[in-house]
Image 1: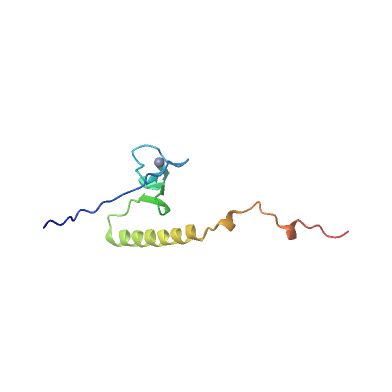
Image 2 (image 1 turned 30 degrees about the horizontal axis):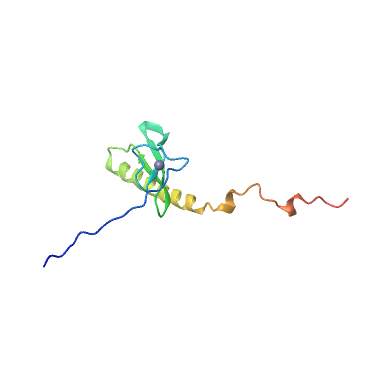
Length: 115
Ligand SMILES: [Zn+2]
């Protein structure tokens, strides 16, 4: 008796987004923006991509930070980098839709004092 062990994997194709690269960086159900760069001192560089999958949207970040060849300094630099990455994660996750809604009507602030 033969047993079939192959599992069939099916992925539904999702359309390109207005911001994705529409090239090799996109897949059947994953879309990636073009690279966005920022440069820092001593050859430091950060590269950010916006990514959308079937189930989530996220930012993918790669950072190259030159560090000292002196071990105590390198360890300190790595500690600072890790702490700053943690702060970045918290700062970005703190942005909620209401925080960006500057055009919302605020009747209490627009009210003029009675003459
Ligand atoms: Zn795409």
